[in-house]
Length: 265
Image (cartoon, rainbow, N blue to C red; front, side):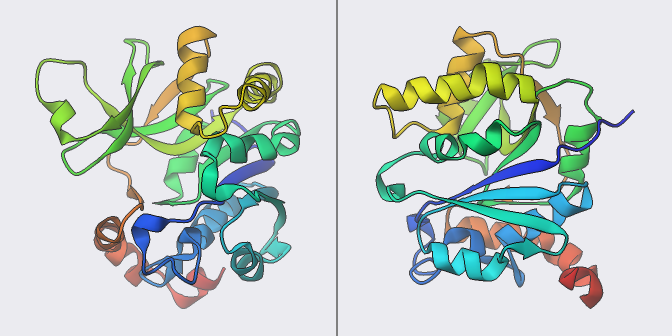
């Protein structure tokens, strides 16, 4: 049985993308193209496919370019914008806090604006019967960034930040890479995540990242976050020029096999 898709989604797309320069000198990272398709447009098309109706995009760096590229409607999606005026000195948790009205509007998907992924990743999030789920994939030597350790029951037990291939050496627990694709229930957003965001911002920790927020909630407040394993699915988090080249190789055949009608849908 597949859960009904949330009507809402939030995409965090405010950052500068400094590691992608010079590609981001004149455009924001979410509009960098993978084989001709902007990262953000790929996300919006996939969200439309699973039935999302409204997407809130948190913008900052070169916000006008994103607003021009997506407009107030993208195909059947209604697009709303929340602006961060301090994007250059705050973390993704601050961007998420700015979108708290959208978080309080009901069940929602949460995405980072630098992940290029196939639509089946969202279907996997919907297949899970859990109320709060995170997409993960096995952590390998080519990856870096946040990772998680899973319990025997499939819950995220522990977040580990700034992981690299060096962390795969030894007899430690198996690591999984967070794909920065989530589905949260309205009750968890209202009772747990938004209050925690309020506390973080009130305390002055405006440079915190979303993964740090979730780690805190899992470890200290018992957030039950099920890991949905997306082994074998095509996806890539694009932080650097080399990441972009890897993503282009991963998706080359997929993009090439899509018809012009599909690419414009």
